[in-house]
Amino acid sequence: MENSDLENELVKYQPDMIRYAVYLTNDYEYALDIVQDVNYQILKNRDKFESRQYSLKISFIFIRNRFISLTRKSKVLYKEQETLCNVQVENNTILYDYNYILNLIDKMDIPTRALIGLLIQGKSYKEIGNILNMKEGTVKSRIHNVRKKIKNLLPEYF
Image (cartoon, rainbow, N blue to C red):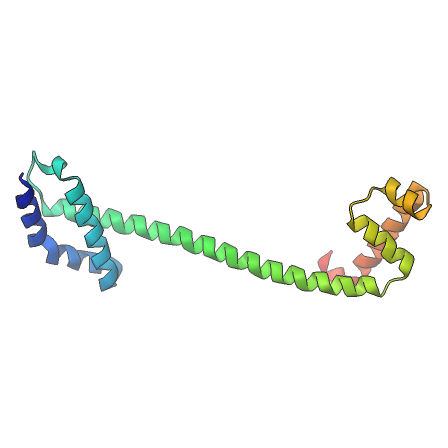
């Protein structure tokens, strides 16, 4: 099939292709985009149509497949955006909880706050004991008691 014949066939079938795409999408502009994509792919691969006659049926198959592909992509993008929104909401909640917990810690006595501060810095029990001049067992016990106190103050989180 010659290039001009293929182009003439595409032009001839345009109204039918657009109607079918509108039927699938329920959106005229989106349908035009799909038909344009399909026409581009057909013209790009025109050498595959040289040996046989171009048919309208192939266009419908291409349009349907393109529609399915775009629909799947949009669902994946929607899920990614939904996940991103959920993460942002969770982060905002975490910041709120973090500030609430800081206020609770501020109300604790100074030795307890010092212990929590060293623990937050990532110090080991042994290092905390050396800094506060305590035995490692005493540090473990006090940290356990602080955790218990925090759990009692925040029962909805534990």
